[in-house]
Structure formats: structure tokens, C-alpha cells
Length: 423
Image (cartoon, rainbow, N blue to C red; front, side):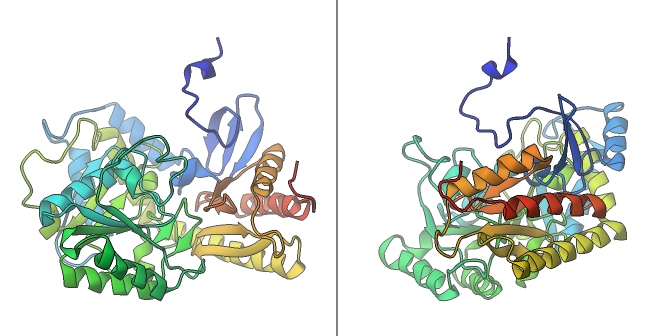
């Protein structure tokens, strides 16, 4: 029996292939076909498939202690990891945190913490944001389809405002005006306990938050007793060329959400925040059976070892420079009228596809994904109209492999037919 028949058809799969092996930026399917991986498990593999240091840590830990629930008894990998994470996150003062199973669970716990600390239930999020698929987190997402469709009423008191960015047409003033309007017609400001944002939106198309607006938001939260939460689940762990993307904005949040690349591919997330926020909560209110599993913690400790090396930052700088130089060259050459702009910052970049006459069109991305796959390159779409190619190869990708993947992509972009819809 085909095992795919047993998987719910509620899943969508960008690439209809079955992978069997991966190494750094390379993967192979069950037919032995090789691909250059620009998806990285959707941002989970910033340091590549099967990094030897992470693999060694997993093997070593699994031979000693595979699991213990931290609510029942402590274990060393958790106790080693937590202070290292708190030291890594650039927020002044004493920090504390908790580990979760994933990014969505980090989101859920951050909202719980905000409610307990402020006594308020309201949350402000942003259009285009993505914070998870669990029932409370999904209402924070700034997009209905497919995440909220058919769910009926969701956890209330969530309000969305536009996301101001140099990568879109939303100005700081538009976002500020919409924020202030909430308190004129929607809710009392005293009901809002938290504002949550991605410093660089992932699903939204690798759009960088305006630093000026971020600084306004920090002051606004301070003035009104609101907690500021930065979702670094996709943008963290070196993705932008710095450990965390909020450093580009010139602010310090009250809580940071971690996940994806935190443990080299093993399920793990975290909430790290100011000690005044994370401590003095009801005993037993936080935790989870698998949250902070010893093997996942060992992998995360290995990830931090990698981040402590200069080499990974040299790789990230080379990647950033290569992407910026290459896309600028393609634009200068005019390889296709669909090549509009490069979004994001550092090593977290997206290629926006927008025709001067046709605007965006879904068949363009479908064509690019399919053609790239045929030629051995895996890509990931993003953006409101699925019109932005989300580039997520490992930061450790070999320079020659990066160039090979970009050469494939250039040829495909240059081959986009003029007729719409593209077949």
C-alpha cells in the first residue's frame, strides 16, 4: 500500500518528491536524484543537513539519556543550554527562559506569560505575520487562507495592523495611524497585554520591519505597560547574518521566541525574556512532557558551539554579498521583466517577482518551482500572493554550490514565457 494514502490530505507539499539523504546544502530523493537545497526544511537548517558536530552530539546524548520530562526531574543538557541561550540573546539585564517543542508552542507560552504578567488578554499582531498553526497562535497570523479557514471563532482580542517595511509600500505613519485607531474604535488600550512581531517576516516575504517604527513601538509599549514580543523563530540563529534579527532594528524586546534552526533539525523551541517577565509566575503554569528533550538540547548546544566559531559568520557574509551582487547583476542585465526586487536583510533574502504591466501572477511561481525542481534545485515560495522566492540555503553552503544554484535560477527566470497564465 502507498504510505501516502495514510497521510491526511490536509497537508500541502511544495515539492512532490521523497527525500532520503541530506548533506549540508545537498539532498537526494529515493530515486537517487540530487538537488541543491534552497529550502532548508523551511529555515530549520541554517548550518546545513547533518552537520557533523550536531550529529556527534545527538549520537553521544542518545547513548546516555534519550528523554526525561524536565517537570519531573532536571537533566544536564537543559541546564547547560538555558544559560547559553540567555547569554546569546542581546537584551540587557538578567534573562530567564523555558524550552518548548517548537516555535508555535513558544508563541502559545509567550501569550500565556503576557496574560499572567499584565492581567490583560489583548494582543496586537501584524498583517502578513506568521506565528504557528496551533489554535491560539493561528489567530495571530496576518492571513486567513489557509490557516484560519473553516475554524470558526478563534481566541479573541487579537488585532492586526499593517507591517511597515522598506520592502513594501506601508509607511511608518500608516502603521502608527492604524495602531492608534484601534484605541479609538476597537478596544481600550488597557486591554492590550502584548504586541508580537517578526523583525523580518518569513511567510510574509522576508520583509524587514522599519527600524524607525520598531523604535516607536518599543516606546509605545513602555508608555502603556505592554510587553513587546519578537518572533525570531525563522529570522534567528544567524539567518540575517547576526544571531538575531531584532539587533538590526536598534531595540530590545521583552520576550524573544526561538525555534527552527535552534537544534539543527530536531524539534525544539524556546521563550527567552527579561527576568522580570519570565519569573514569579504561577508554579506549574509552564512546561511540557517533551519540552527540552535531552537529545534536542544536546543538538542545540552543538548549534551554539558552531555559532561561536568565526567561520560560520564568514560564510554568512559571503552568502549575503553573493546574493546582493548577483541579483543586482541580473537586474542590470534585464534577464526578465518579472525580477522586481530583493527583500530582507543580510543573509535572509527574498526575490520578489512583479511584472511592470502584469503585477503578480500565481502561475509564475508555479512555473519557477517546477522548472527548478526538474533541474535539481528546490525553492520555497512566500509572500501574500506567493510572489516571493524565499532563499533559505544553509549559511554554510559551499560557494560553488551557491553559484550553481543561482545559475540554475537565472536560467529559469530568463525562460519565463511572456504569455499568462503560464502553463
